[in-house]
Amino acid sequence: MRIGAIEAGGTKFVCGVGNEHGVIEDSVSFPTELPEPTLERVIAYFSDKNVEAIGVGSFGPLDINRDSATYGYVTTTPKPGWNGYDVLGKLKKRFDVPYGWDTDVNAAALGEAKWGAAQGLDSCVYYTVGTGIGVGVLAEGKLVHGLIHPEGGHVLPRRHPDDDFPGLCPYHGDCLEGMAAGPSLEARWKAKGHELAPDHPAWAIEAYYLAQAVTGAILMLSPQKVIMGGGVMQQPQLFPLIREEVRRNLAGYVNAPAILSNIGDYIVPPGLGSRAGLCGALALGLEALTSRG
Ligand code: ADP
Ligand code: ZN
Image (cartoon, rainbow, N blue to C red):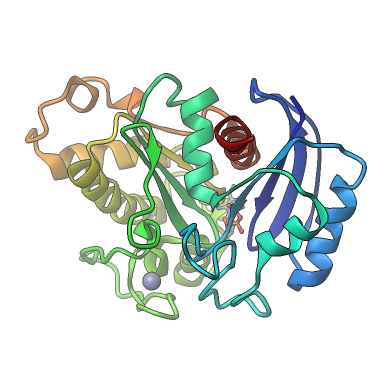
């Protein structure tokens, strides 16, 4: 099989071609500009690739309701030019193939369940902590959409007692994304994440916020695996800090060995590493092909 994959990020687009085993054979990456020139580059890339289906995992919010007149659109993003843009429509005009279309984080959750850290499981939660914070959810073998799609990056955390940072979310101020995404970390400490030493107090506060969200996800969704990726999670010292905070928050109440004795294998980085997003899009394309192709 030859399946097209598009990881449509707010900062960069990655396009690739892969197969049903999750193997990416070729890929390119370019910065996200205004929608038209960006999609023209995507179309140019796939024009000689002869793919049988295309999966798109996109930054959002998105319309992923198949019954909606604006299915395939990016909706209320603050990103200039993209609000109300018909991404899928643009692609469909050029390539008449089955399409998978979902959030970047739902795609990553699906890819991780097929080929990565949640392989063989039918539930997982995938967090990305980067320029923003996003959450994808796989439950009972299906990606969760519900009313729109999960937006767990904007949950409201309890404030750390030593933190008076006001938060950066344009909608909510001190929601999780406003307090703990990469730009907030940078604004609070006046240094980029990768410039802060592993023992800097920034990381304990970062873990304090992320762990609250993970705790909520565990309590609400009972996932079999929690996967955390994105630029900020490149800091490996965050994982033990988050695990410890989650255990403290849960206080023994959730009686599962995965949490009580094996949390190191429960809250983990993406098994697919930096390929999680693109493999996720590939997984969406594969599903589109096998379910409708
Ligand atoms: P995006 O979210 O735009 O797709 P990333 O996941 O790479 O891209 O996230 C970018 C954010 O992550 C920036 O705020 C950046 O400062 C932060 N970041 C990137 N790499 C690191 C790192 N190694 N350590 C800490 N923070 C990082
Ligand atoms: Zn918010």
